[in-house]
Length: 366
Image (cartoon, rainbow, N blue to C red):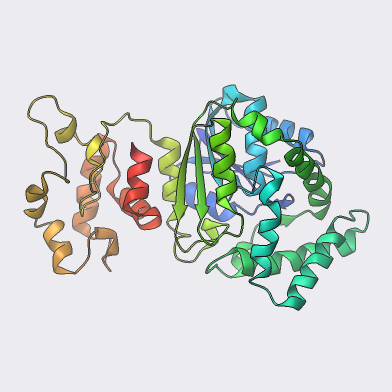
């Protein structure tokens, strides 16, 4: 079952977590649909094998293009399993808040959460997790799902949007959770994810909030030992679900769009990003063969003479335009529009720098 956002071509597929939290990525889908076609896959099946096949039908029934899979939490694990089975239709993987892929660190999630709960709340959490596993009792399972969601809303997020906004389009299914998660844990214990990572050849982007109770070190360790090709993108002051965080919920989709559409092969550049937000490695002045610019890092005097952006930022005590109260101003919008023909969206660049920092942006581009 799918929800389609935006217009064809549909090249981005959102794979939600839970399991059983269908529609939990709708906020992200809404924001992304302003610029691109999005498929939000809503999981309904009760086994992992059936979920993989359901996701396959959702994709081939909506587009003929190769897609970028964006998996959140459990959806990150499902995206890995799907890519292993259907590698020819996946162009890249974006894993947000990926849980541990081996059993070694799984208990650390609970201990991290419990440090943020009172003893009574921790007891309630355990009680309802056990209740949720009893899928035959659907009424109590639904109530347990709700209570667990309210508790993890507090433990897993740094400064989230209100629950009403988050749950606007969510269709919780406790039966899917009870049936699928036990199977996922078995795959994790059996080393399934470690064994398939080395076979996945598409680029993997691992996005993880520094406040997320799911330990990212375990995922990185598994990626490295499996020889996976990945890029790690940490987000400061951010929990398990970046698109729920007040500070970046309206900006986060720019990061996803950038990763999923950036195809130009830039010249390697590791220097600083100037006030305007240009990535010098993809600037015509930097890439030209005759008398190229050396980039903002080494040609800083040229940047310092820029009255429009550099000197304006200095005057206002900031380093980049996104920090300005009136960003994007009319001048910046006009400037950004002129650069679209060169493959850079400066407004988007600025919002990505705001989300993951200058070094994070550089890592993405090279």
